[in-house]
Length: 331
Image (cartoon, rainbow, N blue to C red; front, side, top):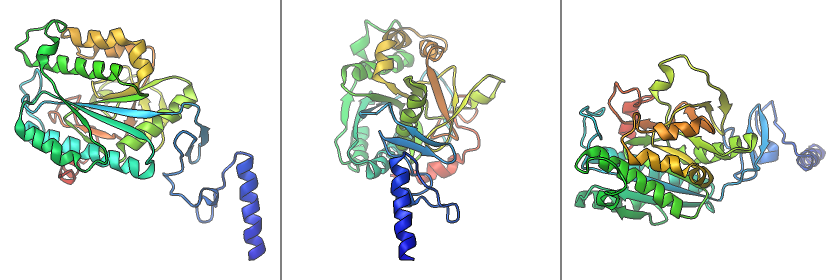
């Protein structure tokens, strides 16, 4: 028995030196990886392992992640008269969205505690209750988010719309997010809206999938966190790739919640600015132009749930227990 253990250790070391990992098919364990769990085999900035696809060496290392969330408890749905699923006050959606985001950040940092994450809130609420909610929700983080209380008047000369309409505030806050991201130092940036519920694994899977697929394709990416209903309305051509924990399908259009790199932001800066200067149809028209040149992907199944109207083709993803996710995200 002792000889067998010694021989096993030698074989494991030799295999690792040669760049291989071992799977014990009898027990379905990974002795060369200290028996790590099936879905936890990857090492950030080193390698990505998906059984049975094997290992991808990580050439696209990720230095940091900036998360920028825009919030507004004063506007229920911009430029629409529809009601959201569950028909709650807007502040309730913001609370649950941020709560789920904080859980995801903390879960990621438990596994990878030396990875740099910054969180910025761009808030138009002008609401003391919202400020108190921020204090309560973000007290569960081990770092302090930056909260910018934004006045849409800042871009009155840059956004070519009626100042008094909700869509002006929507586009001006989006422009603020883009400008904050461009000014900040960092690597990846994750733009989020205030009406998405997030899976616990959101941050981990977005980061690990980005570096895996970017390393495979040698290209920067745009990753959308939600699996939108419109993707299944018509027949279309798409490719499916394996991410860190699930499949991802290629897109030809995005919404305004997505993760990308500073390199993409700077390369297509004119597209980002044009998105906010006029009321385009759709709003993401100029962002969609980027998807014609770069790789854009969304997860199957979804990592986030857009809490829009239940009949919206841009809303809740198919085959998702939305009520369960809603009930589970109580602060």
